[in-house]
Figure 1: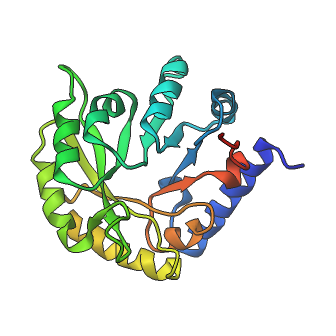
Figure 2: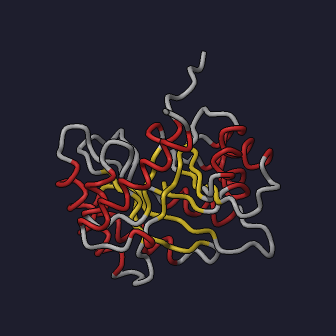
Figure 3: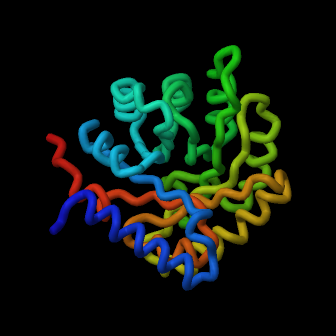
Length: 228
C-alpha cells in the first residue's frame, strides 16, 4: 500500500542499502524530508513516524511551519533554498541549519540577525556544480574563500558544503567533484564535515561519494500539492 509510512520505510531501506554498498555506516547519515508545499499535518505525521529533520526552500513556508509546529521542540528545520539578505532574520529565527550560503552578504546578514544568547547557526557553503551563473551556489574555486569568511562570523558555525547535481551530468561524477571541493573547505575548518547532497533521484550516488545529509522529498511525501 502506497502510504506515507510505507514510502518512508522504503526510502530508509534504500539509504541503508546504499550506505552498506559504499562501506559506510547508515547511522552516520541524516535524512532530511523536504516538505515543500505540503501541509503541516503531513509534517506532524512524519514526526509521529520518527522524522526529526525537515527541509524547506522558501522562507515564508519555513517560518509559517516552524511557528505552527513550535511545540515539536526537537524537530530540526533545514533551510535549503536561495536565501535573501532581507529574509535573513526570519530564516535564522526558524532554521536549525542553512544549507544555501553562497555569498558573503548572506553570511553577514545571517550573522547580524543573531539575537543575544542565540546558539551558533550551522551553515553550509552552497557550491554551483554547473557552468550557469544563474544557478544558486558559489563558483567552486571561490568556495574556500567563502568558507574563510563564514569562519570569521562569530555567530555562524561552518559545517560543510551543499550542492545539487546538474541535469546534464551523471550524478556520480558531479558528487565526486563535490567531495573534492568539500575536502578543500575542510582545510579551512576540519570540523566542516557535512556534505549535503542527494535527492530523490540520486541519493544513492551521493551516499557513495560521501554525502552526510540527504534532501529527499517526493519519494517520501508523495507528489507535491499543486499551487495555483
